[in-house]
Length: 479
Image 1 (tube, one colour):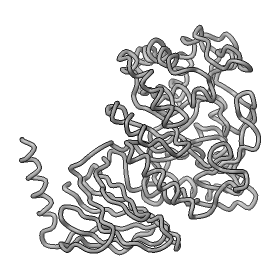
Image 2 (cartoon, helix red, strand yellow):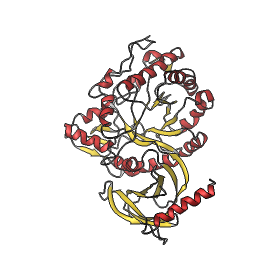
Image 3 (cartoon, rainbow, N blue to C red):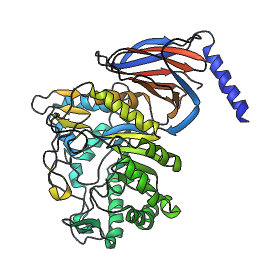
Image 4 (tube, rainbow, N blue to C red):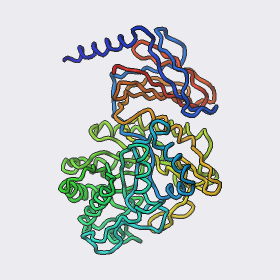
């Protein structure tokens, strides 16, 4: 069927949808005034144009498919969760993963061995036995403990389903040239490191957990000081062939770079070689510095077949927060900052958006100490949920609610569509779901109310936006 004929059928379906009664949109609001994911009275599309900021929604203009939204499984979060009684633990998990009564997180991060918030014990990897090239002493035993990430993942899966990706800060120290002076991987151990990754994937699968995406290095150059050309060699000649031969289901993210600028610079070094690129399943990057979205968009256009994943960002004293500001941030207003960052990444082509710490305590911890591995003291950070381990009070931050508007309503398989128009602190992104529903997320970053008009198929929907709010609009599309 020709494009014109298909378009005619789509328009006809739209006309049929309006027959008999005006098209309705369901509304859900989080606002400074106190609403939290609150359902509101439906609004109706009309044939009459109205005054306000006009946002034109066009599902014929499509971009990236959405993988999901979420945060990270880390021992620090499990320690905090376990400080509550059983009923309240389950309530927190439900609020994060249940798609009906909670945020319904659908894309999550775990980690391979130690990182700064693997806080249930000392620094570790899965094989701290120098020279064990065959990984005969490889063990994930710590992850199986009551504060371990496998226990955490299994408990979360009672309430919802999500894809998992896993990066590594460092391989076992004995694979490095010198952990104190040169933290690059010695190429003599590339085969052993490839086997290390495989053993990790196999061990997790035996526990019923499939790692959907393996990310070879977390922030290379910050942690393991391996350059992009060596990551290319490791991927093309060692990890890629070994995982392919083993027949594992896991796909590979060549790395996750600490900024959008680094991703823009280093991914072409790895992906310009077709023999390396064939093993790449997605491109991961971190959202720190909150800039260079144009470079991210260019990367998306250069490699449209590889989804972009934003796999880590936070408030911390090592990133964007001065010591004069108290972390964690419990002010509702912080949610608007994160709502804008999520939209910035989505508009640049990102398919998955994953925050760093999902749960921390009232002090922004607990954190791991291992200075040689860049895990230092005073590492307070901001999570999605704060659990006060002394008072047992649970605080759902502004970030939680703004992130939940995306994770709860923009489900995996949705596709971003055109949402053109913004003014005076009002902006929107829109999606078409797998069932044909249209979802528009609208931010009002102003301290006063604002009105916006959604213009869709020559129909008009007026949405009154409370001060400092996010509003989700959902209506039936073409099906």
